[in-house]
Length: 219
Image (cartoon, rainbow, N blue to C red; front, top):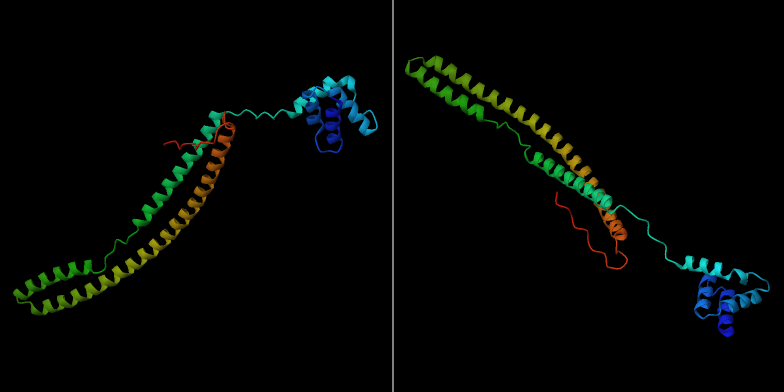
């Protein structure tokens, strides 16, 4: 008994073993009193009171007990995780909506369409004037028709350029919004993964079984 107590006390004295572990080891060997006496002898002073050995044992047992995990509201954590997933899905829908708007950005003006209509109507009128013998009037009408076609094409081209400039500005704005939204999605994804890991760590039985992936909730 004394030999075992001295060996344990020697390790504690040389800081090779914590006092609490040494004391509990001496309890298992049923030499706790010899352990205290040997430890005091090695220290050259009465560092530990043998009369209070029961109190020392209780303190050692408490210090060796694993710390209890704080209790968490698992359902509240799941609800919070689901809310982040819902936010992620909403952001994904926003990206799809913006991409759809970009695809719909097309000019409505087609240069030359109005000029074709003017040409057709003008030809019909000129043919009628020619048949009526109003050749000079028909020639004047022909000249006016060509002038009208040219002016119409110029006007259509100007409207087309304006629409294309507006489309370019809107497309740039939508692209910037998509980029910002994707950055938010990345941040939410990272938060979701953190919440999943935390939920696994605090769920009952997490320390006794391998972590299982938290299934996504269909929204």
